[in-house]
Image 1 (cartoon, rainbow, N blue to C red):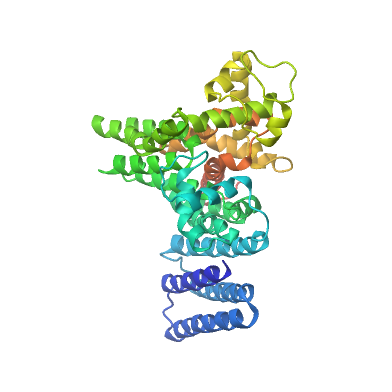
Image 2 (tube, helix red, strand yellow):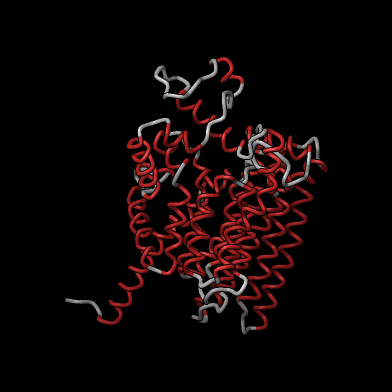
Length: 460
C-alpha cells in the first residue's frame, strides 16, 4: 500500500498544480521542477529504504507543492482558487491515503477476523457472485482473483477494503458537498479522513467502506440537485441490487430510500416500480441458491437471527416461549447452533411488544445523539449539535439524509444498540450523514452570523 500511496500523492500533486496556476512563469517552472524532483526523491527513497520512506518522500513533496501553490494564490495574489473543491479533494485523498497506508502496514501481520477468513475461503471456492453462502457472495467474488493469484498471502484480503477506505473520503466530500455545500462536504470528509476508527476499520478486510461508496453513488444518481435525471431510476435500482448483494442488512434502508425517491423525484409510475423491483431481481438468484441448498430462501437471515438469539438468551434461565437452546458446549463450537429463527420473531415475538418498541426507540435515539459512533463524553456537545442538525435536515430538500440515518438503524441494529452488543461498523453508512447534519447547522449559523455582522457592523 505504501507504493500505491506514493503514486497517488504524486498524481494528486500534479492535479493541484494544474488547478492552482500562477501567472508568474518562473514560479510555475519552479513548482513543476519541484514536482519532478519529488518523483525522483520518492523513487530513490523507495529503492534505498523501502516503501515507508518512499511514501514519506511523496507526502513531503505533496505538502511542499500544495503549500507553495496555495500561498502564492491565496496570500500573495489574494485570489480564491476556481477549482477550490478539486484542491480540497486532492488534500483529503492524500491525507486518507497516507494514514491508511501506515495502518495497513501495522496490521498486515495480524490474524484476519472470522468474517474475513470466511470471505477468503469462499473466494477460493468460487467467483460466482450468486453462489450460496452464509455471509456475502459479492464481497467473496470480488476477492476471488486476488485470492487465487496470491493463495499463500492472507494480507491480500485487506487490499480492496483499504483502497475503498481511501476512495470513500473524497467521495463523501463530493456527494455531501453537492447537496449541502462544498464547505460542509470537506469538513465532514476531513472528520472521516482523520477518524482513527475509520482508518483501522478499512484495513481489516471488511466490506463497510465499499458499502458506503455504493450508497454515496446511489444518492448522487437518485437525488441530483439539478432535478431528476431521465435515467436516475435505472441507476438507483441497479446500485440498489448491488447493495443488496453486498449486505442483506441494506434492505430496510434501501426500501425507504427508493420509496422516498419514487415519491419525490417525479419518476413515472412504471419507473418507480422498476426502481423498487430491480434490487429484488438482481439479488434473487442468491436467494434461489439459498433455497436450493438449504430449503430456505432466507436461510442467511434466519441463521444470523439465531446467532443473536444464542448471544442474548444463551445464559438466561427463563427462556422466552418457543425458544429451544442447544447445549452450551454446542454453542461454544458453533455460535449459530440451533433451529433458525426469523429476524421478525427475534425482534418482536420473543419479548413483550412494549419492550420491543422501547428497544427500537432507545437504539434510534442513542444513534441520533452519536453514542454508537463513539461521541461520548467529553464530546457530547458535538452529538447534541449533530442531533439538532439531523432534525433540521428534515426541513431542507436533503431531508433524505435524515431518513437514511434512521432507516440504517431501525430494526436489528436499534435492538442491538439497546442491549449493548452492536458492532460499530454495522452502522458506518449512517456516520457521515449524521456528521453532515451537525456540520451543516454549524456552517449555516456561522455564515449567517458573519453576514449579519458585516451588514450591520458591531453594536455598542
